Image (cartoon, rainbow, N blue to C red; front, side, top):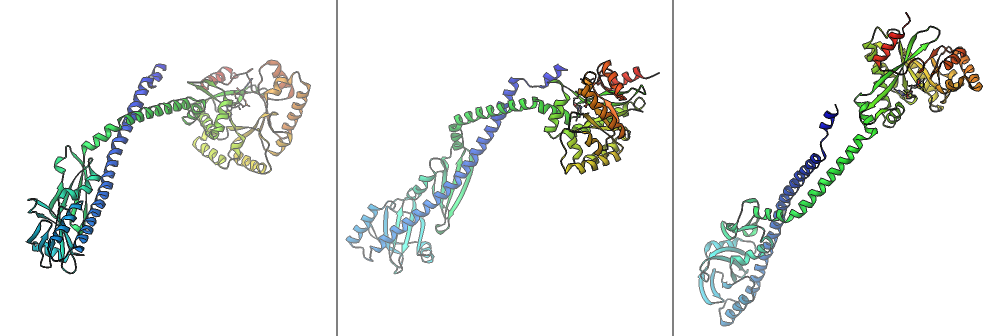
Length: 517
Ligand SMILES: Nc1nc2c(ncn2[C@@H]2O[C@H](COP(=O)(O)O[C@H]3[C@@H](O)[C@H](n4cnc5c(=O)[nH]c(N)nc54)O[C@@H]3COP(=O)(O)O)[C@@H](O)[C@H]2O)c(=O)[nH]1
């Protein structure tokens, strides 16, 4: 048995390993997934910032073009060329400026006089655009490759174009996205700038934004190398969190183990799992010389705490709000006892201890009625022993009387337990329709030698007889006590003198041994 139980309890090494594994799994999942989501979020944010920067750059480009055209005229004199050269020199973006007329002929550039016709497609885009501005990728004579051109035309037909290397446009995006992300900037269907061919690993995510005014699209890619780099840099932090979480789990485990081993938790579990036992103590009738009654008493042998006193069980059950559970458990066990030994218990009444506060509860009598339905063998044979542990207030008195009537109507008898130690006085007896009065063992112990106790018990016995109540003397341990009780005229006796509370099989054996021939 012990071997089996200890085999079920994991060793400290196993527990530590389990929590270390569990916390590693949690920390690893949280960090890997969290990092992935946060980088995706960063990708979106930075792409939007890059889009705004690109938009600002485009606005700056046209502010510059407007400045150039406002300083220019339709001539291409030396002074005009010098002005264009100076503008090129000071421009952070443009490498060349050209002036064009209303026929879209570029007649002057910072290199000198020219006569280049702007493509019709571009010319029509300029005329159709809002504010007469457009951008395009055109093959440049100067650079000998496809490059970026921006066009602006004033209302009077004088226009300016500016040539800029694509990387100057992309510089605004570079500052925001590099070195983490790769991107591709397209103008219409042509690629203006791209470093996506340099992607060194798998792409884990991508996002795309467009600047509709300029037909530009910015596609940004999130490479797995970025993810692994970040994860690697988080490693010390991951390890610290792993150790901390393992520690928290382990401490939580110790607290849980401590709680589960506490008496409070063990009692709670035993009541809920119905693992407590009930012992039975016979009550002997002196005149009839037999026994027709027993008291059911809770017993619990805890694996951890050994034999636990019923006083502790009852007190704890009360504090845990499980006192009614306990009562129903005992009553059901009494019902099971009747079912198991129908013959031997045919004429035996069994009483169960009940907390007075339980009786006052609204649902008590109906719950009791349900149990009586479940166990018909209890009808007419079940008794409840109530200890008066506190004074009843004005509101409780009539309530208690009605509860008593309800319970008695179910065929259940009622006894005052421990009479003389609680709040049950003589006046109390007159008010409540108890069937039996149990004299507390403290009185029985001093009955033989104490004149005062004898006088009290004589009056109580007299009153009980007047009220038609049965009397039981509790705690009779010795013959002289038995004689004193007999002299008092008490008929029923419970005590170690006759029998201690016994498990069901033993009490049946005791009955069989002590049955009158
Ligand atoms: N609400 C519930 N209360 C219960 C239940 N089971 C028990 N109890 C109450 O716990 C108190 C202690 O009970 P226990 O230790 O079982 O003691 C009982 C007897 O064993 C003891 N007894 C009987 N004869 C003698 C004797 O000759 N000498 C001696 N020293 N003790 C003896 O008396 C106790 C019975 O008391 P009572 O109930 O007042 O008749 C006790 O208050 C129980 O009521 C339960 O299921 N529910």
